[in-house]
Length: 295
Image 1: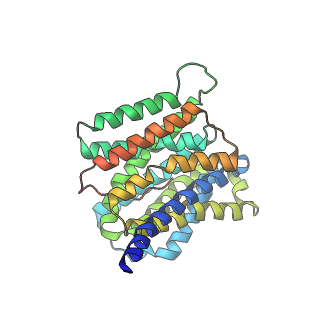
Image 2: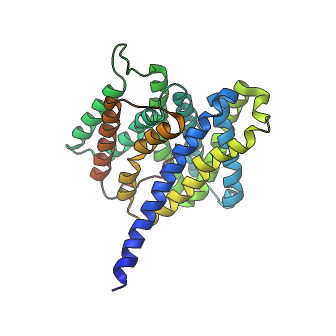
Image 3: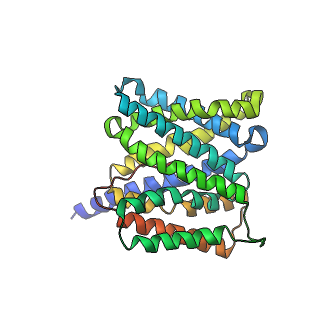
């Protein structure tokens, strides 16, 4: 008689971890925006990745992993994609509400899921995603129009997210989470010069360090660890389906922490993209792995 409560707890535990991880990521993104006036999106990205790489290197000690040339190449591409994804996403949220930026960015993993399936039903998910994009990026000069440059940055982050998934799966097949630490290090080395060129000595301001550490923990170290634990305790398809609601967490975080109010059509657009993402995830072939994602 005690098996059922334990079974229910075992089911709810990873779901709870994943919800906490999504809330952490989007809270970190909201906190990151507070650094923009001081060091810009470029400097904020550099601080986040540098501190995150230090934390993950100390915790995971990835130098113990032995890699061949092919794996090392995948790690480098994975890290470059991670750095590009973070940089372009922060460049986007300078002018685009957080929930909309995440929804646009989600087109990357959505494309990966659809290409992994190639079923007729996927045309429905493509259509829903297109409807969502058209609602988010209306033609003309309506009051609901969003900044097109910011939207382009978010879509670019989506492309990087797709590469992050594809090469992260290849690189992580042999060394797991240690690959993530190396990827974050590559991303930091890639983005740091850009942040330094933009913000210069402002990056060294002592007052920024606590906030930067908070962003690194909330946006990278904590959620990544929770996602890895959750992924080992639930089917990959369930993981991918639950991750599809992340734009809602982003929109709520933007509302609570940044005062970003979305219109009804924008909420409907986010719902359309989420539905497309859930449908595409459920349509994936069973053997297709789901990668851990990070904003």
